Length: 64
Image (cartoon, rainbow, N blue to C red; front, side):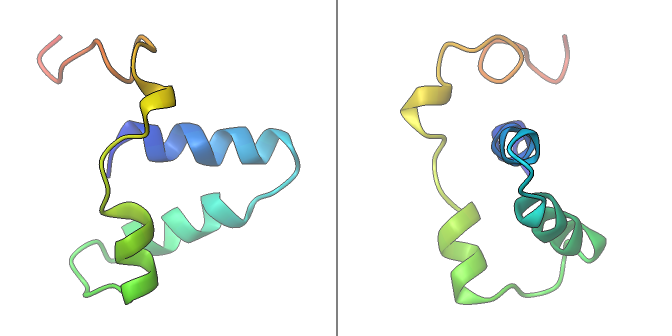
């Protein structure tokens, strides 16, 4: 799980779309289960360029 996945889900919630949040909740309920090919293609990717430069997503490390 990367924080930018949550940012995208929260952005959708602000529009009234709870599907991404529920999808992440389902994935994280059993994080070690094998996921579908669709989920892998959707979430096992590099961070989109529009999230670079946003503090808290790009600039803060786990040890901060």
